[in-house]
Amino acid sequence: MVEKIIKTESPRGFWRKRYTVLALCALATFICYVDRVNISIAIIPMAKDHGWDTQTQGLILSSFFIGYMMMQIVGGWLADRFGGKIVLGVGVLWWSLFTLLTPPAAALGLAALLLSRILMGAGEAVAIPSVYSLVGRWMPHQERSRAIALNSSFYSLGTVFAILVTPIIVQYYGWEWSFYLFSGVGFVWWLFWQKLITSDPKKHPTISPKEIEEINSGLPPVVITANNSPRILDLLKQRPVWAIIVAHFCFNWSFYVLLSWLPTFVNKGLGVDFASIGIFTMLPHICLFVGMNFAGRIADKLIIKGMNVTRVRKIMQFIGFSGPVIAFMIVGEVETLAAAISIMCIGVSFGAFAAGGFLVNHMDIAPRHAGKLMGITNTAGTIPGIVGVYISGLILQTTGSWAMVFQVTAGITFFGLIFYLLFASGEKIYD
Image (cartoon, rainbow, N blue to C red; front, side):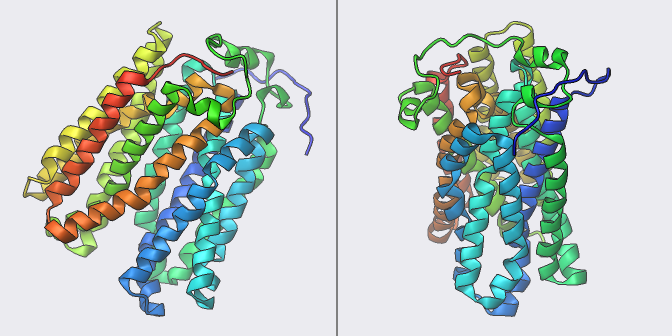
């Protein structure tokens, strides 16, 4: 589809076209996590209906990450090459289709369901790289921290929504309808996306020249490179890229341990009854949502005031990893629910400051190739979803120690912090 290049002056007021882009990106992220997390709840009645044991359930849940990991780099390259609008739009339609097909796939048998989950994961893999590609082109340099923080915070919002709403749908309509209803949201989103968005702000039919000027303001010059279309190997030769890769891996290790094992910790480790688990496990996710948006605004304000971008990223990362390290070191030693949840909420709130650190650092280094770079780092960040969760379960099985699970997570997070402080940079390497 050829996008129009006619521009007209946009109406005066607070709202800008880039805010619409960001709002729809955040909504896509919300839908992504709702569709991803709902099966964690729905699989309980699904397993009862189909007679799956726990090993089979684990296979079904982990199959998603096969497709998700395989398409990360490809998704980022496609978004940078053909535009985030096309790739994210197709991605949402793709994963919504396979969300819709989950119940009939389960009825056909385990092989069909596994294939459906792998293909759904492939569709969701393009979401975050596409968003990064769009933000790198649409958002001014001094607004990118809060933009990425807002988008990233919708991971938590989608998770909380799925945790709270899926049981209600399952109770009143059956587990099949949790997939049917949630998939429909993605198709409706796509209609608005097609009508309102372009990949490049200069090609938006109703954007004002003033906003184009705002978007391009404050961009730093390229400090390295004669090649403005970097290959993956070119990117991997840069130490600041490895700083992001390592930080992404370590951040996701703690995030996936929290996402996967917190309900079990609350239930079996702290003795909370099953019916009340959702209420307590959603609290850290709410703290993460609020904290990320707060942290993004702080990072952008520091940049607007003239602080060096590298310094801003390292300060935010220091806060973002130090808080969880301390929280994970002590949470396994407490014995009361109130103390454990309070420590988790405080640790996660500090962890949210990473939104102003490594999570936005991709666009400092290579704003027009942020999708490809995000694809690389999120591939590394997907590994803990498989390895980290498994190792945590192995520790529990062999030692029975929740403290050790959380302390291993703290050690990995601490390593990520040191590595990032040593090698990260906010300088633009590629255009």
